[in-house]
Image (cartoon, rainbow, N blue to C red):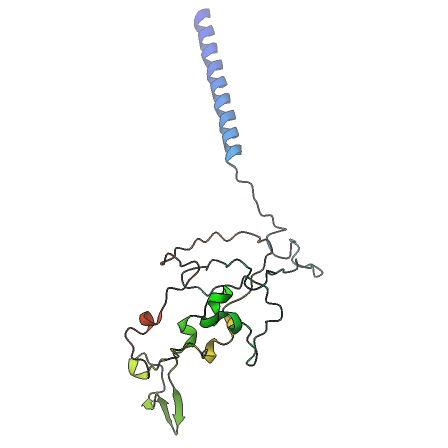
Amino acid sequence: MKILTKITIGLAASALLLVGCNGANAEAKAEKNVVKPTITAANLGYRGTDDLLKEDVVPPKVAYHSAAPGTSKKIARAFQDAPPMIPHDTTGMLPITKDNNQCLACHMPDMASSMGATPIPVSHFTNFRPKTAVKGDKILKNGKAVKNTSSEKLANVSIEVDKSHQKLYAGRYNCSQCHAPQATNNLVDDNHFRPVYTSPDGASKSSWNQSKWLKDIDTSK
């Protein structure tokens, strides 16, 4: 009887020891798998504080690329055919006005290659808007009366291309509407988006060309 009691006590002690070891291992494993936050409430926003009611907070000064045009490294496009961002200093170039657009000095197609600049594409020399006028109570598109509504019919579409690439279309003249200088400040969180380009050189070059755009549309002479 005494021997049986000793065996029972020994088995119970072994079981408790085993449970204790497993529990300790589980706790250690759980602690190891805990993901520690890399962003705190204080640095979650650009202001650098978690006190949203504080009024005298001065956010970090925005610093832009200071490299001179022609010496900077081009920024990869955010996605296929995205407007390229400006990687160089723009001091004295902005704002663009109707009488002053310094972008054209380097980015016009006949100058871009020698300046190491991205050439302005054919889309920027193209007017995709129909010629519209109002005569009495009629709306004329390309000289034809149409209903007062939008239309996708090709008969109401007029595309005029400056094939010499000498005259920038007025609707594309204000370059900074789409192309903008980029800040060099550290981000609160990095951009984890990874684009998949449809062209091998999609990170640096547009894949669009005149033949693709105008495939099913007769251009005006």
